[in-house]
Image (cartoon, rainbow, N blue to C red; front, side):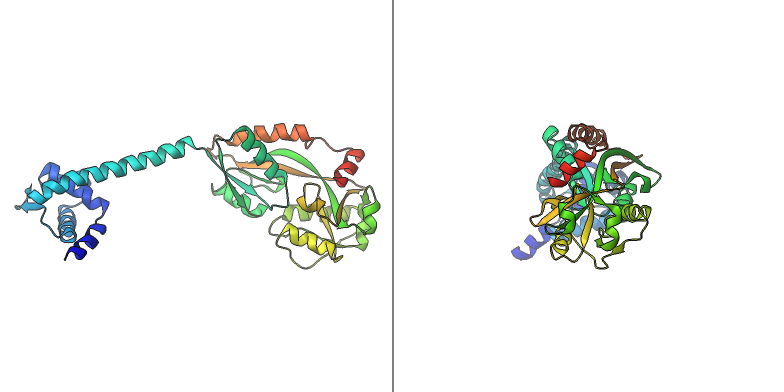
Length: 322
């Protein structure tokens, strides 16, 4: 019997406690039901269920009126304390959420270091902001921005939906990642036309379709359609592995982190030299107060690192050797 009652206590719902406290204050089923915005029969059913689960009678009833039994009076004291604790717990959670700013940020792939560098800068200057990183391709980032699931993302501004605002943050030189013993490795810059004889690995289409189209257009500008590697790669490390196996060359911007992978060399493309424009993206209606903070931090970082100035040929060469 005792075990059955303990299980019943565990099944008591907060709404039953609230209904009971309201009824104990009114001692009238009609008035209590009106306060709780439910019909009188539903209130009566919930109180009866509570009594069954506790295994005690809490109320002496007449047609409309109710009076507390000794068990009910004792239960009322504890029920009020439980509801007070729940209320304080909810308020504490809301206060914590209000005092700990949260920013939901889209990143493409750990191999691209523009957004990770911005977030490190932001964390150094605003350690109070909690950052949630969401790794997804640029098309999915656009959808999440539109749906309010992301506060800020990164991509190519010309492909962003109409309601998305963009701020150019980096002009990123395009180049090729090759094995150290590849013929391109000794060049300061690789003419785009030289890629016509190479099997070219682009990024994963679901991740960086804008960058892929940018590279294809660049090749066509040089007078040829590139021959592309037909397989798929799920990570930047897997792409570097294919390069090391001499299966292809990888066309990526200088921000690609595995550009300094042992055994590989990144060289900038020239004739023509082109920069891929990375922009911060956010939805016009997003209410987050931290978007401006991210943009300001990113802009200071961009000016310090020279992201927003077209790179000279000498600078491109130095970037390729780092």
